[in-house]
Length: 229
Ligand SMILES: [Fe+2]
Image 1 (cartoon, protein in one colour):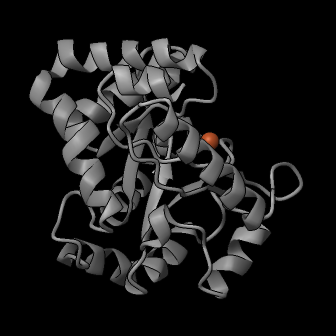
Image 2: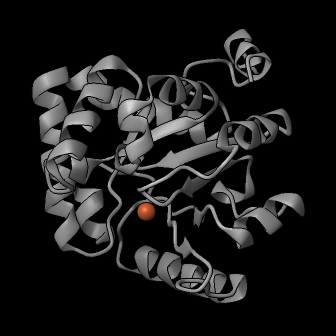
């Protein structure tokens, strides 16, 4: 899988093992061990990519405990962390919590936002979430493999600039071709420079803990968001 992504041009591949209470919750030591093994084997096989460690955190009780303890597994132990929600409904008070995370210097990175039904219809919620968080659309959705509605919104948000970046969400080798199709769609419809922005420039800013739209500090727009709640 890493070789396939490298062949597509990826030079940095963030490993984001699921952290989901009751389903996928390997210990952090086990994850570290597996990560080290992958990094070593990648180096041995001559594939030239870096593989920072992060996690795909489900917004659940474990995530919340970790947030309170300031121990959310983040990208390369930095301030940006990946989080996902259940598709059918947003957690209560989500914007307030996200705002608090921003004021504490964190950058929430929203995994596959096109899956969340509340964002399909609630434009205000979408705009406020995009103002506070990095929105990372799944290339499989862009390619049309994650449902019709998901493809439609993913493509619309890419065109509108609501989506800041794209990611492969690869779980197996068969996902590489799907990611390639998503990239091809972006190249064809939005151009090479957009593809570069979505897969290189913005991801680099996100990994540095900066919101892709701004310098990384809380902007006026976010301030207004909080005041209006
Ligand atoms: Fe996910």
